[in-house]
Length: 201
Image (cartoon, rainbow, N blue to C red; front, side, top):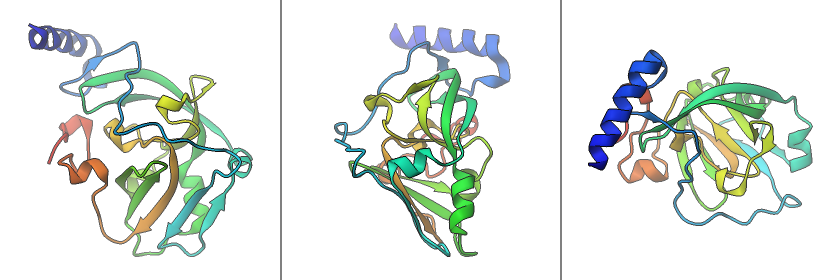
């Protein structure tokens, strides 16, 4: 019965929203909390965000330095691999492309491993991180992120399933080859395009 209800709701949502909702997804008004493990304890006094690896010049930011960077607010939809989608999210933070310009990736850099406090990782291509709508966000809908949703900083990559939008991020490592992150090692798709339903490998 639960599966029948889900399928009926998904069909209704797709009929209503057309091309805006990827296949196999249904809308939610809430924001489900999903993660592996517990919420890491983070102290802003010692917090640091780093860009390292195949770059001309590494960069490291304290929390105060990160907030002093040019800030941007963007609206996007998000799509979770567990079949829910949430429309019209306003994110405030720093465009990843603006940070990447500072470190100047080497020509061989094609992939990035995203590292989070607590040990979580996920892989994203450098080309997709440079998209206009990709942010390192500290606010959602005008409010600071809550701890369960990634406070103080999370990555937002709207074009990919939401497990790629890592919570509690602490750095980006630029690499020449594609390596699997945490969920990718457990069978999730290396890319994660919602429109192609790239849920699992």
